[in-house]
Amino acid sequence: MGGGMPGAGHGMGMMGAGMGMGMGMSPADRLEMMDRDGDGRISAAEHAAGTQALFNQADTDNDGNLSMAERAAHHAEMMRRVMDAD
Ligand SMILES: [Ca+2]
Ligand SMILES: [Ca+2]
Image (cartoon, rainbow, N blue to C red; front, side, top):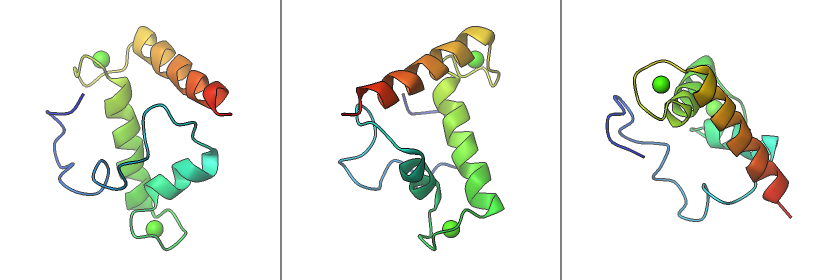
């Protein structure tokens, strides 16, 4: 992962060493992740950035498109994380 993410200079990735991969994330956690300025609300810009980050995560071959397989894989990964949370 990483590399080739234009404009992702700060924000996601730097915050909190404990979060991310492997931990089950509740929807609230995900919102919190998107809420970069921590005001408890997701602005359009924050939403766009969060969506872009998710897109980049799902676009594993970084061709700028989500194939059916990539979407399925990403969805499965999300489900797996949710299921793993215990
Ligand atoms: Ca906010
Ligand atoms: Ca792709």
